[in-house]
Length: 363
Image 1 (cartoon, rainbow, N blue to C red):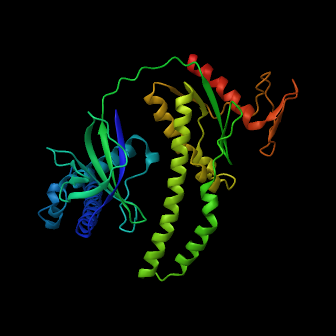
Image 2 (cartoon, helix red, strand yellow; image 1 turned 120 degrees about the vertical axis):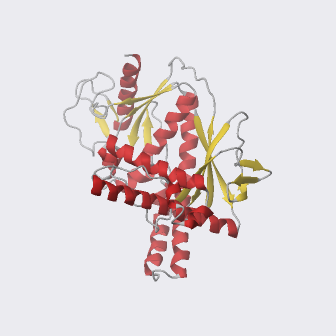
Image 3 (tube, one colour; image 1 turned 45 degrees about the horizontal axis):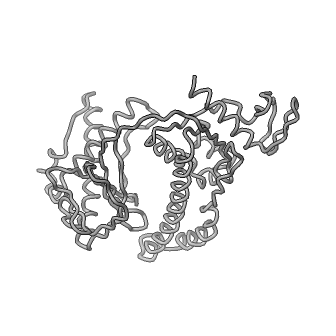
């Protein structure tokens, strides 16, 4: 199995310059290879298998940066082509823009070229980079690659990918929990509890609007505009960190408490584009929460059961099983016409999702 650790790094000024050069070279080689492949296909109807090494004679400055970073740019381009031909919904590979503020490159471990040395991370070309290791890496795990990232806020991070052996034994599912998505509080579970998500983006919205207005008034290309852009980026980064912290803690708590979690297989992108729900759906980050919950359950041999989005969980009575023909979005209390049950709409749906998940798991 693979697992990544994200650590903050503090490069020197000289190392920052080299990192920026590497970002630029990776972007250049990706775009150049993509352009040459497109031109060759238009001229001959065939794709060429070009490599970064074939460009180094013409563009000598490519030799200044880590060659493995350029090789990974080729691998990323090959992956983009494979994804497109496998499923066109991924879209045809696009050129990378130099205006993109999310910058990264990946290098691989070869003959001990990456290692730790007393608070420093040794990387190809960069040598010793100061790193803040806030988590202990288990013994016996094998380092595979390192991805250097620069966030829009200007902070640098190193994502270390490790490979490890793990024999996961599936547990016998005895305890179940159903989760029904809720726009305001993230979810309501089958025990009647709400997640209580604090809606960090909504809390920061007024401050973001104020700083964004200042950014809009700055002259493009000026130093003040860059300072203001970083200020706005730091606010967005804070919201992201708060959301991730909340979701990691909550998903860990659930994964440790039950054997199987049952959820609806929702199209979150479609929901964000419908009925002006975009901000609320993005603020919740429900899709990211389910990914966290999925791998934490998998590591313990537990289950995440997905129920079809077409299953009428909200319209079905959790007591007698009767299905209501019409149920508007504004009806927050479910009232069963057959048995007289009255309960919260989301609570009722979460119970139905739990029972349907049980049926799917034991089918």
